[in-house]
Length: 385
Image 1 (spheres, rainbow, N blue to C red):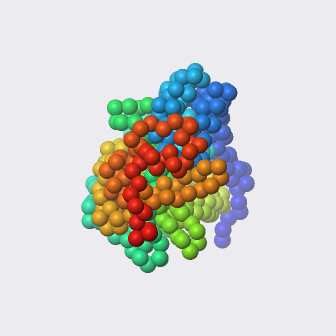
Image 2: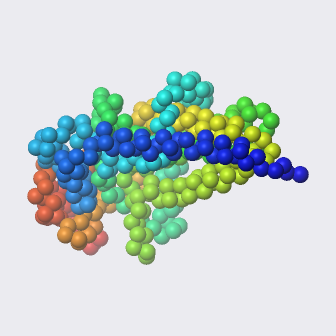
Image 3: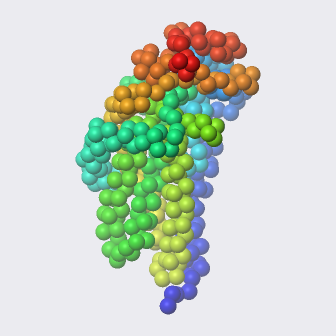
């Protein structure tokens, strides 16, 4: 017979689990006020950047104009670039839930080291299967064929925003990489909760080992796929009038599964421990697992994804061009009018490095798409052939 719920134990456990949330709110406010700034100069600069994004243009096309604007407003270049990053890759509450990890990073780094060492050959093997053996591009090709969708290429507004590796420690670059961390972190907690729910082993160490193996596999598959899909491929469903980046389409399927699964497993295990175990110990274990997964996720993002990311994307882009040969489009908006204009093939766009042949100004935003078509050579529309 199941025991009665130890209410005091349960309340303490809930308080421990809510502690990261209580720390995340002031951490977010601190980041916005100290790093981003909330004064009129910052608001004016962000409005300029938002205007570029609303027009569907790439921020880096306006680098000179933005630099001039930041100088006029008295905003330092690093702070200006960080505000751009916050609009392109906004850090939400989920990111700041992980910030307490910074306070105990040395301890967590030691605890996560075995997972990192074990994961390196697994990541390498999965990269060979998914990328070099063309499994991922073949799946995407089947997606296009079986579901009647079309794959096209639309350059992302943040293309080229991340600086070269020599400035990897620049705050804006760190924010871009940290933006991608929660996606892989919560997989670690999800993996442990699955193992804990399925086996309920008396030895916690064995549970952690099994969960680590599952986490490494999930991290490798999801991490490598999402890294490859940063190649700006977009899924078009003409019958439903939808345009969605493939990476967002993947997130739309993955996030509900992981999110609902986390809440269900966490609630179920917490109630079980409140009846027949120690809910406080379980809550502490959850936080330890979460922050160890954060250390692994950061190591993956700043290590493997940064070191191998560019090579993975280049290989995948070459495979996409060979297998799909998608057209590259400009999706722009001017005075409320949205236009999707085919410009060239993806291969031609990448050969031109997805950039204009001259810097654009804010005046060009008022002349879309004519200003844009004057910058990038427009071939004859292949859809009319």
